[in-house]
Image 1 (cartoon, rainbow, N blue to C red):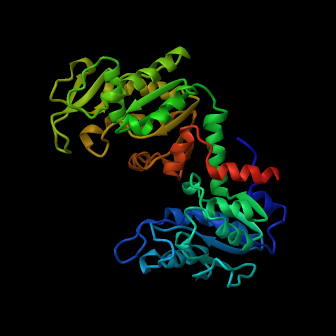
Image 2 (spheres, rainbow, N blue to C red):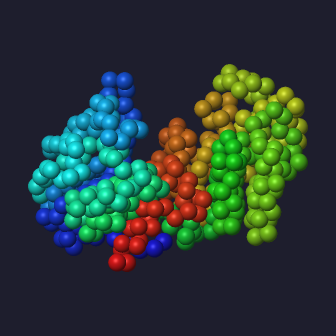
Image 3 (tube, rainbow, N blue to C red):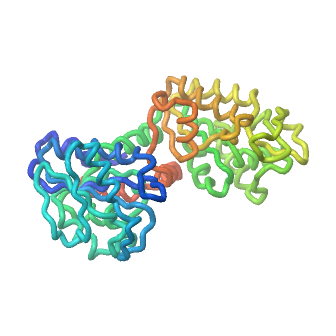
Length: 399
């Protein structure tokens, strides 16, 4: 991956001392109807960059989006006030919240942290207006992008400011993501195995096509696997599938085969007559699926084969559970995959909301090489796209 400036290096070199440091964090946390934060992982993840800046003697400004506000129209529920309170608790020092901050009508001293109100309230933020970008760049001496979850968006506080600030660099969280992605996709230890699962091939088609040219094995799961089973001539009953994409599925299989790689098709599955947690689960050979069956998981034979292959992998990229793991009767496949990844000596990177839920359910957080914090950004990387944040930081590093 192209080189970029790291905030950790700037701090180690003493270049942040006395400087105005603007950190774009991802503090978009869930809240209840009373505005209380219900889960603070993203706030806690932002602390290392802020602490780094404080310890380096910088004057620190932090901002983030929260929810989906309308630009220029403040509503109390759009405020970062609850975030400011939690951030102050985590840092052990006051955190002032500043509204209407774009024109720089506020002061911040070295050793102080201020939280700049919800950046998506600023007119021109989402479309990255040049006027806003210029003002944002003028606020700081160093811009730190530390929000991987927004790295696929070219907005004012994620891209425009990176072009106009005197120095633009990657914070520790973003740098860790960039390093993990490079390790998994740019310079992987082989065999490289990717697990791509989800309800529809159409939503992951470009990812499948991109990975087909890179990986040694492409494991498909969920509704995606049903479409691939159909492409392989197997019955799938009334399972979720996309018959109009059989040609695309076959093309992915052929592309893999041409490289001496493969897409393992399930040999057995777990079926039910209805989609429900209490539905009766039956294990069947893949060729024996009845017309009124719903495939809700891979079978134990398939799970064991895949687990054995994952344990031999040099690198594993995981996006999506392979069955309806939320239902106890249909979690066997995903559980086996998760445990195989946990026991593999290869480097693993996992991302996507459902994947993170599965990792949490089976308690393997410490056994996954890297857990990505960005849903959409992670998927775009798998698609082979260069994220705007990566592009602009690399370009600024060359300037």
